[in-house]
Length: 111
Length: 113
Image (cartoon, rainbow over all chains, first blue to last red; front, side, top):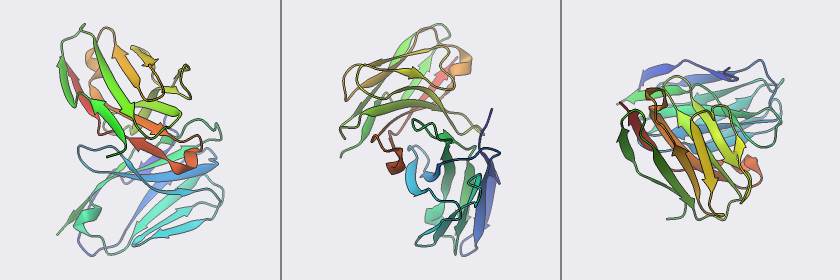
């Protein structure tokens, strides 16, 4: 059973374009995280959101946690080749001892 | 550099062989984890250890065993490898407050033929 579904699964865009990646669930999460993973490496934490409706910005990346805390989105403005990677969301269903990872979105930014 | 170190980076096993994946962290974290990553399925938790001396099953523990050797080291053992265990394995550690996120190793790519 996959708690978190991400869409799209694959995304290929030109440098300079904007994009949005979605992370959806029927479950409520006490907090949600986004990670980026580069080939041959482990995921690296980008952000943690904990409040429904919360918006966090990290340079050209904007993260939003849904009001009902069941979904999240990641928006990238003016994508660059360095943004290429696998983006993973992960949610804590209030167990306190682990996050469940989404299916991932593989992003390729073409120069 | 501080972080999580996994060995080996690549491994090919024959069906039925056994092996142990090693993991060590130098961040003084209490919690350590083993995940597997398969295409289109994200990361799935195999086992975790909330503190030295304790281990618990995750989502997909069948076919695996773990040992929390001390606070730094957490190993994953495949007793009798099967082709379904072909995957990329990641070790991770975290502070007690998971809001700080996981720190992952660089992974072990395992192929069982």
